[in-house]
Image (cartoon, rainbow, N blue to C red):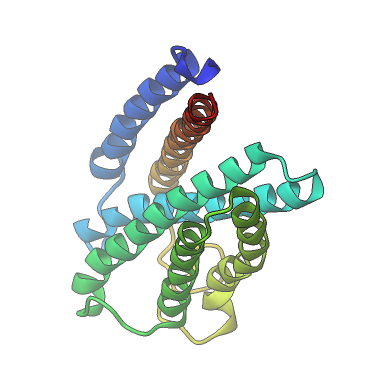
Length: 231
């Protein structure tokens, strides 16, 4: 039972992630200068962008894993990767919404507005919550994995729609990578942003490894239980 062994790589990833989180906090709160218009509340930006990046990355990984599951003979490892990545993506998606609300309240004077980017983000989040509910409603493992893979491929359409919402529609949400009204970033701000992106990417890899190991361990327990019951 390989999953019972000590996970050295996982421990290294977790330690490195902890160090990077501390570094990201330093760069966001101490290294980066105070934005002249929004003030200190703008520092949420460094975490908000990093969290949003991971949410999108996680759902993209689930999308690819779903394709591989169907294309390579329905191998269980791809189903595990897909569901683990969706779970992480949903958690980070919720964090995106919450951090955005904390930022919006002092800047827009409201917790929420039905802006196209915010609306598409909420829709995408509910779509993937439905993905998890679908898995919980199907008992047969192969049927569950097959339906989840098809759903995961179709559901990913909501991610690029959310990303391009600020360019396709009239929106008050800033467009970091386009020609929107987002204030220009100084060199220090960009450094803090990239440190945050690297940090949350490492956090994602750490969580993904841990979650997939838990799922494999659950599979092994199920096999052992079946062996005991069949005796």
